[in-house]
Length: 109
Length: 149
Image: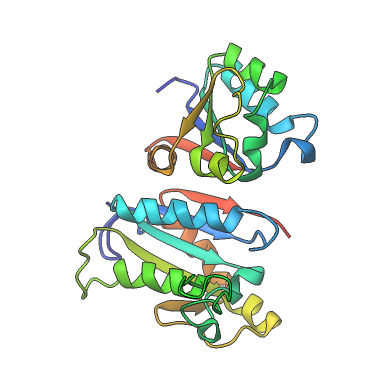
């Protein structure tokens, strides 16, 4: 684990409700500080996974990762559409393991 | 995974505090999927419900929703049915066998339930004062707060 710690930020809010992308920006700041950071998109949050997503670019550039909950993508018929660069499709098993991992701090938005 | 009351260390691996309304978003569905997965992986989990989430486990809901005339043979469980199934498969009772590893404790906030007229709760659900929440969270290795008015 990085000396700055490990963070899992769970974004459940759609991009229409957070146009400034404050939560992804917080994830990017964490990643830039040296923390291992994963932004996990669930629920309406997966709306950020389809198409270009400039708010995610800064996080990815800083070495962070972006996950998208497969079930939430399927529910919105987004699985076959072009995905924003760098977004990884994951199942609840991977999300759960990250939540339970010792030392990982989890924040739900 | 997590330890019993008599051992040192946390009582629960994961605590979820649900105050987000169970309608209008997928918060509840995502939380239930997370809890079910954690239980399958052997975690000992606590769910604390406030607000309208205290109505999810009323016995009056029954196990299944009313039938759909367009799909008569399909059966869709109610939230009470889903949560009763989780509690039956993962009882948080050292005296009972835990064949699938995990254990679930489900709390209903008494004040929120009374405020909304939530009726009798299904077996296994514990009703407690909000003042107990702090003690529960102190004994949890990790806490997730799924908030909202």
